[in-house]
Image 1 (tube, rainbow, N blue to C red):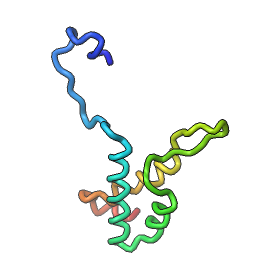
Image 2 (cartoon, rainbow, N blue to C red; image 1 turned 120 degrees about the horizontal axis):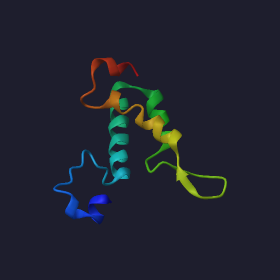
Image 3 (spheres, rainbow, N blue to C red; image 1 turned 90 degrees about the vertical axis):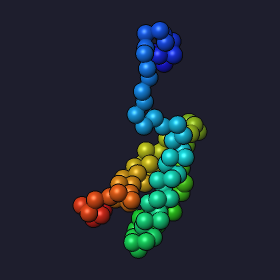
Image 4 (tube, rainbow, N blue to C red; image 1 turned 135 degrees about the vertical axis):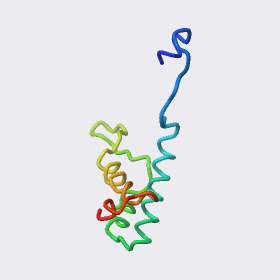
Length: 94
């Protein structure tokens, strides 16, 4: 926002891994984990993912507003590293 407001103060803007579409990014991760869990026969992870479903992870609060569901998000993304195509041997004991 600062560069947008005062561009004359900046020579360049460099972003490292900006999230352009978080829901799409999370959906790709969800499918990567699900496919990896199926390949390994990890029924616990498969059941957990299927119960949670696809992103976006939202729930209704007490006032009836949609808010982020951090528990669902963490349950899925906490398994992402161990199912990454570049996961180390140490991460496979999830």
